[in-house]
Length: 369
Figure (cartoon, rainbow, N blue to C red):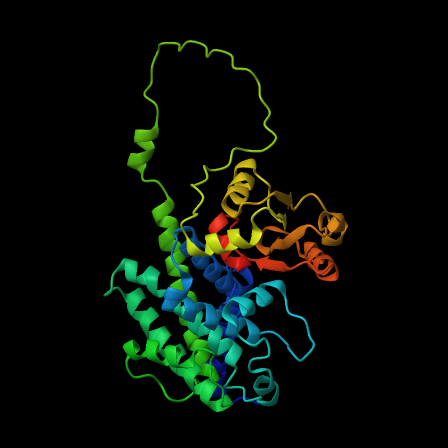
């Protein structure tokens, strides 16, 4: 039973909790605890842009740390044990980072302290870190940037405390510790459930304001509307000349850049594949993209299976032969059932690659190596 003087406080606390739950239910974007997979895909996008620009991703310390933290966060959210399979995105992430898929699984299984949920701590830290470039663009002295810095410090201290409580180290632990020095002194103890709830609520506020700011920037101003409006005229324009009807099989793709043959990883992949056949599943096989891959890798044949061609990967078993040098599974551009082609390749002894990025020659070559 609650005392009369405590009822008002309990009522307000319950109302606040219901409002936050309603906000989570109606939000267009996922909550911070469900940001792990989205952040991992965004990290893959950063990696892909580096490869397109001819930059070696291994030279970018911030990208390495982000990929490590995002992979560990997704692993921590996944039930694991020896012999259990992983999702394609986790297989891809652990392959790229070299992180043991069983990293920390015993510690998570044996340690049940409610204040040290390492999966939440990792995801919350990466999600808060993701705010800094956007709030920095608004100005270093703006309230949003200062709140984002406060959140990063809070979540960083909480993450370190959780790792200590579990007696666990991150795969790039020393690089991680070095990167935190610029943040100044951090909290030494894990957040209490109430402190963590308040920090997550602040995360939602910053996220929503950044979304509103982005939407405001995208909306054209009235002046732009006026400039875009055609000037009224009383002269009837001449009828346009008829043009022959065409119905292209595929929409025109963006122009492909010249094959990046000067990049070392493209040259190494070409040395392995020149004059051989490659099978790729996923996406839409645009002729220009197809030719760019053939030219850059020196392929004798590229059998590109579109996502809409088969309902299941095993249906394409005849497209993997003894002459196939490697099978590429473009996991971003294919359905989950198309992973069956991986089992086909494995059964026929053909190497396969799980590829999370774009289908440009530089990115494909880097994943093959």
